Image 1 (cartoon, rainbow over the protein chains, first blue to last red):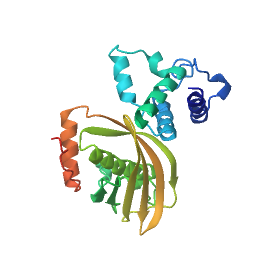
Image 2 (cartoon, chains in turn brown, orange):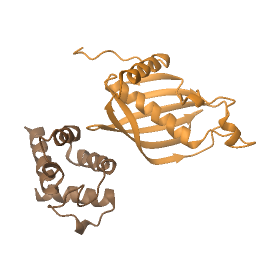
Image 3 (cartoon, rainbow over the protein chains, first blue to last red):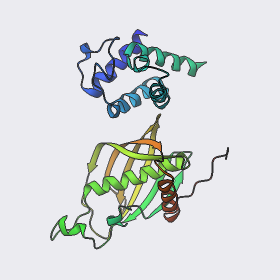
Image 4 (tube, rainbow over the protein chains, first blue to last red):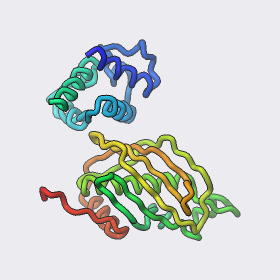
Length: 93
Length: 157
């Protein structure tokens, strides 16, 4: 998880011009870092490229809107890292 | 090109879904009210409309890729470079290539050439959403047929 977190923290810092040392595994991308949906598309693109996956943003958003998941499950960075690790593992399976 | 109707693409000249590329043509009109202001005595195709022409071509590519199931909307323009002036009467060749098909968005690289000379280029982000209503979907299909964009129905119906 740590290397995945480092990668996405660096992506967020570079894409959104956020100081790297203010980004922690506990950071919520929206609530704590103030990343809006358009900026998150840039982050998703960079993550998709870096990990060779396709973040299911629409599925996650739908789950949150339907009350089946919380934003913390997908947008707190330690949880986002875990979701990315799962997607990478599923790709290689 | 019907600038006042925001219909900037005249025809699709090539569509290659396997390579995720499209090419279109657009003839800048010799006269338009837009040229009265841009600029008085020196008519030029506005750069924002060149970007729009790239966005429309990119949009048709995304519509074709998803076989009219969803609608792209311009969300971001990056690294846009307007390299030279475009004058009334010039024929534009517009190429777009899908760089990335994300979840609910697409990234497209687009270029415009005139007489093989590169006019402008940009990286565009398009949000890809469900059609807001059936009227828009129908209008898009009609417009696509007018400009020669035909896509077979998906294999599963």
